[in-house]
Image (cartoon, rainbow, N blue to C red):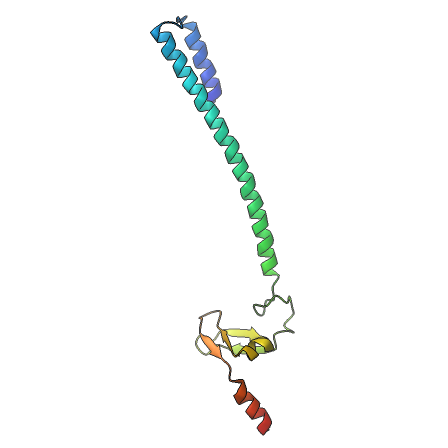
Length: 137
């Protein structure tokens, strides 16, 4: 038996007592029934709010899944958003600190440094030394 049915049963029992509503006992039972009805209304309101929140959480979950899918579509070989097949990532580096393989493009090399995504070590590139080696050859 649910709460609403239980309250209906209680009302029936009380009305079967043939209490006078003007006497103390009758007033007490009426007040108890009123409080219980208010509690049932409050609980019903809470359930409606919970349903609304569940719908919002489902919508947020779907939106988050879309974001995750979008982020997973990024290039697998680096952190760029090119959706490539390794063509944009011309350079393959190994972090001297942790040995992680890092892929990057020419723009990153020209910037002069990159942070290892695995250990956080800063790798710096000396482009002037490379240009001197190329001109000596």
